[in-house]
Image (cartoon, rainbow, N blue to C red; front, side, top):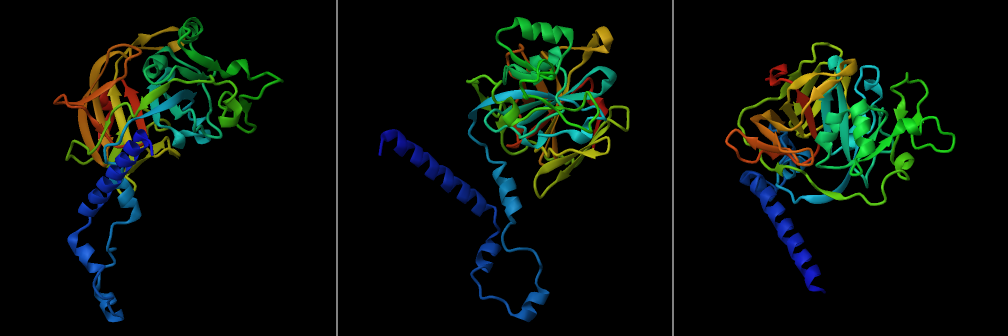
Amino acid sequence: MALFERFLLLIVLVLTLGVGLFLASNIPQSSLFTVLEPLPGPFDLLSQSDKPLVAPFSEIIAKLSMIPNMKKEIPLIAVVIENHEGARPHQKGLDDALMIQEHIVEGLISRFVVLFNAQKLPKIVGPVRSLRNYFIDALLPHTNVIIHAGGSPDALYRTAGDEGIFAINGLYYDHSTDTDEFIRIDGIAAPHNLFTGEEYIKDLLPKWIKPTQWPPYETGKVQSETGATAIKINFFNPSHNVQYKYFSGSRRYERTNGGIISEAHPRNVLILEVPVLGEKEYGRLDIDMQGRGRLVLFQSGKIVEGRWSKEAPKKAHVFTTLDGDPLNFASGQTWMTVLPSISRVDWE
């Protein structure tokens, strides 16, 4: 066995032992000894609690998600997905996302920029919608491969003139008779009916996508004792307002948007406060994703207040507690919403 292979084997053994000790330390001693005692008789069972002797499988998995994990190098792509109320019932692919970035657009509704592992794309994803310049600024630290359908003039100008951005505009393929990289689904009103997916888009993607370190933040136990299991985000319209409900068994959040329950169930709900600087032509928003600001992170039924910073478009966000320590996320999917004010968010 080569020296490198022995080293990998040693790492696996150490990690396995560590997980085993972690789980054993979280099972009450009484439970460990109870399983060794004689089985109770039928009358004894009637007086016993129905609580299981060991933690349910879902609780074990939830505890594993809190263990700090090693970062991986993953090739990522981004897809812009519509969140208009007419598109919302037809959204596909969100459950497979590593991160969903939610941005405000004109009309003060939101649109998603969804990050996927390029090697594990959904079979179908969409509805694919148009790009904005500030979407690009939020994406570039993670990927330069963006799938969209049209865009604002400044976003299209930027993607056309920057060789470092690999943008795939679905509108260029929409009316082609020779290709089927994007499809229109019958029964869904345009422009909310444009979709793509793993088999459709694979030939358009770059042959080699630069891997990105993921996750882009620290993972571990939540740095708060303040509970928050219900979250409300005010978009000033019942058709667009958002609610999250926390489920302790899976340690995930259920998102309801205008009465529609999302197929995505994130482990982290992150809110960034980023001011809107003004409006451009056709009401398109001017938002600068660089700078510093407030944040709130909901993780494991708790809330942590903190700060974000971003030095340049190609620099990743830095997330810290109010004390300046790196903010701990749960491993798994993160839903990041960018709002002009955290005062729009309520929790209990």
